[in-house]
Image (tube, rainbow, N blue to C red; front, side):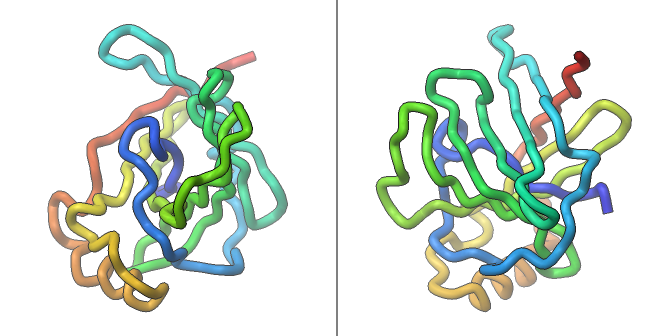
Length: 163
């Protein structure tokens, strides 16, 4: 099950995209393999950090880019759609205390953890319609597009930060 997770990048990389969740109440347990501080190097040599903390048995608290003055914060949980396990991110605010300005606060991602590396791929809102009006419509849009090669965006690869 360590194959899929939705983390990061609302506003910073691509903007929050969806206004409906896949799940309203988290039911799947967290994957402890994703908990911790992760880091990647961008093309310009800058480091970005992703912090994933357990919030409870079914939810995470996510910060990206963690430790920056503009860090964003999300509640996240695992959910199922089209035979895939996704991470549902609900972006709730920023380090300076700004709240979301509209109702497009949801993003979805897959992830895989291998050793000390996590690979994250965001759901592509250009392929899976971001203007769906309900959870059922979103689940159907994901199912209808899951086999398209560009249903997920490019990989973001992070390495676990050691103490």
